[in-house]
Length: 101
Image 1 (cartoon, rainbow, N blue to C red):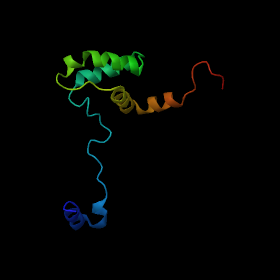
Image 2: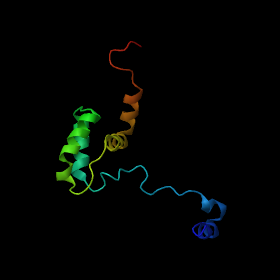
Image 3: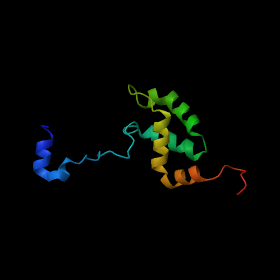
Image 4: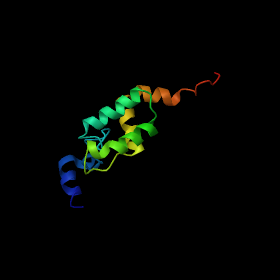
C-alpha cells in the first residue's frame, strides 16, 4: 500500500500498472562477459547445437567470469534467439531435413 499511493498520486490509475523491467529482453547472465557472448555466437555460427555450446561454456566459465554461476542451457538459447531473432524463428518453424512437403 505504501508503494501504491505515490504511484497513484503521480500517475493516477494507470500509474498502478506493472512497470516493464528496463533490462527486459537482455541477458543478465552474459551482461559483463563479452568473451562468453563471443564464444556462444561463434560456436552457433559454426553450427554447434545449443547443448554442445552450453557444455563448452560451462567448462570455461570459471575462466571467463570467475565467481559467477555458469549460464544454463536456457540462458545460452536466449542469447542466441536475441542475437538472431529472425533466424531462430525460421529454424524453429522449418520442417526437419529430409521431410517431404
